[in-house]
Amino acid sequence: MDVLKKLEILTDSAKYDVACTSSGSDRGPAAGKLGTTAPAGICHSFSADGRCISLLKVLMNNYCIYDCKYCVNRRSNDVPRAAFTPRELAELTIGFYRRNYIEGLFLSSAVIRSPDDTMELMIRALELLRTEYKFNGYIHAKTIPGADPALVEKLGLLADRLSVNIELPSERSLSLLAPDKTKQAILAPMRLVQQGVEQNRAELAVYRSAPRFAPAGQSTQMIVGASPETDRQILRLTESLYQRYSLKRVFFSAYIPVAENALLPSLDTKPPLLREHRLYQADWLLRFYGFSADEILDDTAENFNPYLDPKCNWAVHHPEFFPVDVNRAPYEDLLRVPGIGVVSARRIRTARRESALTLAGLKRLGVVLKRARYFIVCADSARPLPVSREETVRALLDPKAYSVTCEQLSMFAAPDIQTLAASGMSARKAADEGKENAVSCLVKAI
Image (tube, rainbow, N blue to C red; front, side):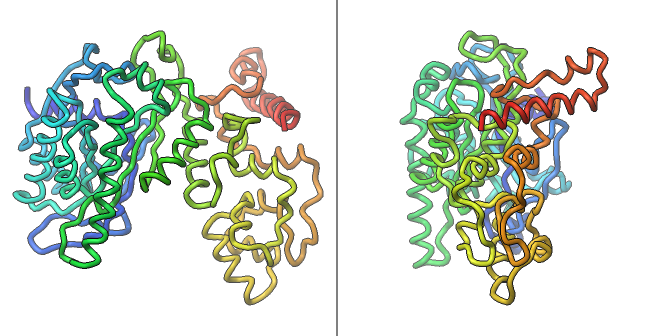
């Protein structure tokens, strides 16, 4: 099989891995070497299905010894198989880089023969890139669960970022859908990477020329929608991973049905893209806004509201926290206000030292008043805009939730827009009808 045919098969096999990360490394240009990992990150483009791509995202091979029911490359699936040699992969990567097609490499692999054999092939390819081809650019490599710790350490010295896919949100789902994998086999290399990063940080404090181990840290990926866990379970696991393993990012991947199985959604089920989007919004709240998982979702609501983003949903359910006085409130309270982000909260904190802030001043600072005005007071507004709860909810509704092309959680019994339109109603009127019904259901639920 020629190299281009292998490339076609192995890039297609890798498309389910999420790799929309910027660099995270600060390695600058070096004499006699190709590429850099500037702090500004990697140039991004978008694929036909809307996913962000900036790297050559490819598998080393797709011959897998495992039979994970959700995976297109599982042992029992009848798909074209291919495998790169380390030399072929290194030459492809450097060739694409010289043509300015890519800024770096995202390398993963199916498990061929054993985890150790697979990791050795990946390491050999990266060694060729770093030493023989002098590639100085960004490399993200997937660690294979079950591989020898020495191989994990070696891979971390060659790659900028390492990741270990946790795959499914619970041990029970993992045992049902991926019987060849165990929770311990996945978490063990995650702990090794964390310890390696911390040890390397201590070494660099003493020896500036010490080799760097995974300078961009580690990340992981979870499949959403293949198993029955609630959003709250997924979010609590995400929070735990950040706290226990110092992850840079947890990525969520909406499950795309690739196999007919009683344990999986049917093949005609649409990927839960809006659910994935809500998880990313909640992840942002965990990392930058000071929220905890149990604040965002609790026993009364274990799944996200599809019509409100998580921050707006929290605000609507906690009227006792508001209004927030933007001229006096601490930074942490400002971050809880819908329409005020990290940047605008910092600007508010700086600007109010000079003079009292007004609505016009807040707008100049980047505050989204369309949302924030229901929850704040300022110099020319003694109280929030006096509106009913229904008007507030209506103003906060996320228009993405009404897109007929976006699959979402069925939490409220809104009418199907396409059915309404088919009955002779105009598309615009059908959309409005669906929105009105959703608002009514939503307000009653709140």
